[in-house]
Length: 273
Image (cartoon, rainbow, N blue to C red; front, side):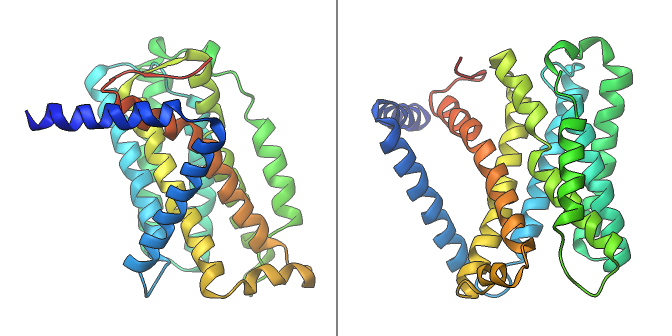
């Protein structure tokens, strides 16, 4: 009885949001985002780098959802192999940088995630190859790799570490911000998205929110100091922040339809035409 009442309330809220104009929906989304940032800031007062750990944990949880999907359903239908390969690339680069610079909890999480991602790639390429819909996964990955590499050479952090490690780190940041693009393109073409794939992409959206929250709260804590580095020709921080914001907004549209679908009680997510 309680579940039915909760579902009814969720459907009423979903219907209310759906009836609003696009401007009101955007305003509501921005307000919710800001409220979430304030809540995170009040919750974590000491070390906001915990947000990066949270982002990596949520990403790893999303990969575990994919592993469960592949082992339970014996199909990789709806999954983008190219997004998984891009994920493996930026994780490998970031893991190499982390090992060279300073091994910490991020190194452990990245290692666990890249091993899991490698297993997913193996399953798609070998064991479940017959269920992979290659026709829908048609975005050339060099469209993403080449611009990210060029941008990393031009804009990268200025630290005491070697230039190659700094370029590699910037490349991993830029590539991560667009790695989900093939998956989103594939889902837009398919229109119908099964639950496990939807859960995985939603987990990516939550992970990006935590990472984006770190940068924004960092600006607040330093009273905008990092933004003034632009006048000194230091573009790394603003560009890294922009990369996080881009990926967050790329996933925001999907997350909206995901939440809407869950609130409506639908197992299959339908993307708009």
